[in-house]
Amino acid sequence: MFDFNQVLKEKGISLSPLQLNQLHKYYELLIEWNEKMNLTAITDEKAVYLKHFFDSLTPSFFYNFSEGHKSVCDVGSGAGFPSIPLKIVFPNLNVTIVDALNKRLHFLRALVDALQLSDVALFHDRAETFGRKAEFREQFDVVTARAVARLTVLSEYCLPLTKIGGVFIAMKGANGKEELLEAENAIHLLGGKLDRMESLLLPEEESHRYLFFINKTKPTPKKYPRKPGLPSKEPLK
Image (cartoon, rainbow, N blue to C red; front, side):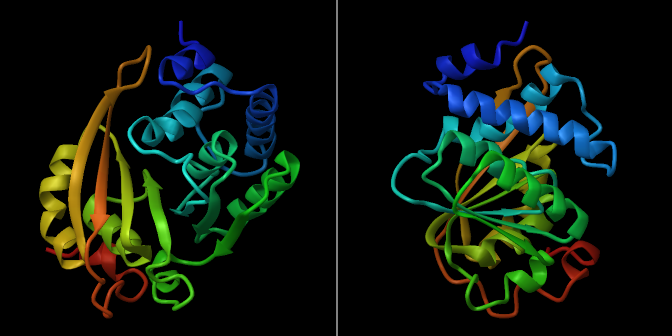
């Protein structure tokens, strides 16, 4: 049986009563709001803890989020994954969430208020336009994305936001390796370089997860990201 606390302890993460309470409130609000809008198809409590909360925390098994006040931008966060679970466990993070769907941001605002999270900024925008704004372009230590688009497209959304010396962490499922091969040229073109690939199996159900840590080594050419819709319609070759 999946034991959320125990599995995290095995990874060196011990949660305080406050953090456990925040995650429980998160679950309750997710289910409550899910009745009004489509936030998740997963509603069983154990499944939410495994497939959303635990899965969101997997980058921290391979990357140190606890050092300093790292800025994290979560692109296409949906119901707050992975950035809100990461923020709960690593309260030092300064989180920016970008999502194109305003009603999801209504949920996230309510969630951030209910959990009393500080240093969380929410933006209703498309990644393509957000990444062209001077105040955000190449400003973030870490840029994350989970289940948003194929890696070629995702790289065009995320690498323009990643600062030089920062890292873009792409969270992928079973087709991750195939997506990486397809995205190699795009990653290079956008100023990124694959640092490493990590793989793991989710506990209990043993579904495959791949994490790609892509370092930002040089500036992204000014013409990227292209206008809204184009990255997904005509992915970089």
